Length: 97
Image (cartoon, rainbow, N blue to C red; front, top):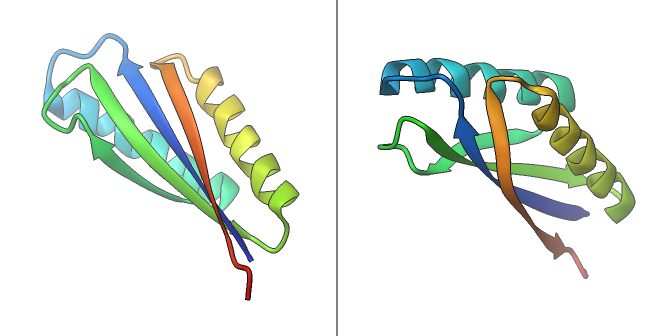
């Protein structure tokens, strides 16, 4: 079992309130969850209306599969016009049992 987590710092474009930000983040997280079968949560910058940090986790039987899924997630985020990816960091947990 291989677990990988992607931390993504985002700038949300053309929003002027937390309500608008939440609408966009909800749309992004629903799309990622449905399309890639990953777990997604907003993990930082909840009080800022033009910034967000998402935590995205995946569990896969092989490390390469987890990497491919997170790479696809990153590509999907890059294609969304309403957000800009500022930074990403990946962490891995490998089951050695």
